[in-house]
Image (cartoon, rainbow, N blue to C red; front, side, top):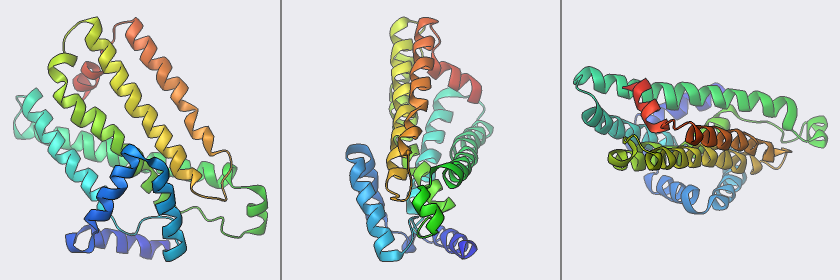
Length: 234
């Protein structure tokens, strides 16, 4: 059954006419301004379609398209390697950051939830306790949106400020990246809290403490996170 879902999902990803772009924009707005409304959308999908995950790949496709445009902009601004620089930027942002890392995080979340976070009464009854891997990937896509907006879009326009060697640049870079990654974990927690058979979904917020610690250390030691990331990828 899951294999059929995957085939249908990727088949629809190749046909724009089969994707609901308007609904996707609404979901993106919910993530940015009212995440709890996305929980209601998830619950409604389960009630109507009997599955938690999206069967519409538009959200992931639009993120990939946005990453492609952002990669082109960064390649033009930061590298003199021409076409090779663009390919390297596309590979880094789309293949590594979004897909490989996203699939790895989705799989880890899937295994942790299956083994440790299903409520005991649900686990023993076996009723409605199925966690879909594709839903875990949906949660990653939702969580990646604020990372994209802050670390790819907003950061691009702030590059003239962020690339200076001074305390203000270091501080703004740390605030930007810490906020983006922290919001990633917040949206992740919100996404899994929509599943009524899970417990302790607030544990997904725990890494935020580590993210803040990294940000504080970066500011104290004057490590410009933006310049570090750009150096690694360009």
